[in-house]
Amino acid sequence: MSSQQEQTLVLVKPDGVRRNLIGEVLARIERKGYVVTGLKLVQAERATLEQHYEEHVGKPFYEPLVEFMMSGPIVAARVEGNGVIEGFRSLAGATNPTSAAPGTIRGDLGRDWGAKVMENIVHGSDSVESAERELGIWFA
Ligand code: IDP
Image (cartoon, rainbow, N blue to C red):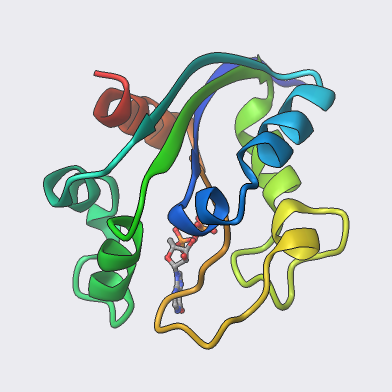
């Protein structure tokens, strides 16, 4: 299998920050051997989130998702490594924390709280194109 040096955008969502999981998420990234090359705590603005989540406009969970992402500070990280885009998605686990595998961030630390939107602790870019686009939004 070939992989290449990549950059990805990781967000620790408001639930992760509220639950004091910033260090836990960054520790898992670093223990895997990836390198954090940009890091900031931000209160996201609606315009930024509308750009970030543009592919989800019109879906039933879109507005709850934007509201949730504005409900408290988030951490944005630029993370680098060979194959890091797929690698971080693998560390994060499936979108739904109920079905995410144990051993993953969402599987170990997330659960279904009955919220309108899945509160699943982290975001990670899903392709080279998304990573470039999203890093441009959060690390302009
Ligand atoms: P991902 O974060 O695993 O890439 P996406 O499909 O890009 O998943 O969805 C973005 C975010 O929207 C998810 O992380 C989750 O917080 C929320 N979400 C996605 N699908 C649903 C759903 O069916 N119900 C509620 N929330 C959802």
